[in-house]
Image (cartoon, rainbow, N blue to C red):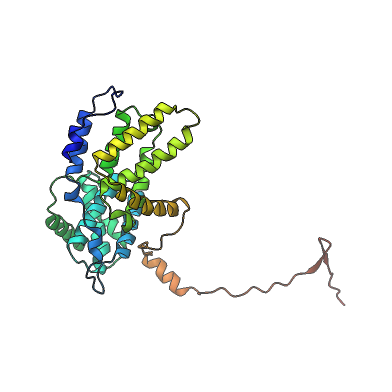
Amino acid sequence: MDKTVKSRGWPLTGAKCNIKPLLFDLEEALSVENTYRPSVLAIQYNVKPGEVTLKSRDGIVHLLRFLKSWFDTPEQVFFVAVGYLDAFIARIKVPEKYLMCLAFACFFIAAREEQLDIPLSTLIYMARCNFTFQDVLRMVDVVTNKLQLGSKITTIGDILRLYIQFLGSCHSTVSEILDEEELLTKLGVLLTDSSCAFFRPSVLAFTLLRFEVDKQLSHTINKTASFGDVIHTLAVMKELQLRCETSAADLVSCSQFASKVLKRYNNHEPCGNNAYLKWNFFPSFRRRDRSSRSTLSVINEKPNGQIKNGRINRKKNRTN
């Protein structure tokens, strides 16, 4: 942390609250973010055929979001799993055929750290790939040893939560209407794109928070918020930007990439990088499917009469 930031003191004299514990937690999280921040762009350097690319990385992160939704786990599980995945593939050249096994291993480790009981057999059955139960267990051991996992890491979700608490501690009007769960969901969407995951977690989290604060201020500036509340909120955001050492150039660059990703998300546009799971049918269904016809024969209709003026005129057959 820059010493000039610490020595300036707190400029907002109207804040009647003790924010020292929160500032300590924020500074501690920012001081270790580089330790847990993988170099995502290192994946594309000297990539050989069959190795993990940025496109395949983005696709497998989409799969982790699906697993998070399927098992209804907290957002923290997703953030931890993505952090382990990016750190591993940034350090080690992983063949693309092992990427899904690696992703499931990272998700299993993240769920275990959050004390969630997710059966590994269920994960393997959902994967429907060629790796086995023992393959995932070996991958779990490899990830644990290579990354030297021992204690919980500080994720980008933790930093965003501290930002929101910072706004609340300073009695900002906007903090009362911020939806933390929605922000965490959008943050997960940003991590699925490597162009956004490249930035420092503190920069990406601050960019997303600034988007939401600007939107809320534009909605409330002519309704309930007074001019003093707006100035107070902008001052808090500026102080927060200085605390996390986010330069104007990084903020502009990150905002450009993040706005494109969020626009696709809000418009429900397909990303094109999804890692799709394969359907796995029971053997009895497969035998039945093979014995059935692939197409149905055409049914020739033979109407008994003609339709005129909305009525059916039936012709009676005469018998001799």
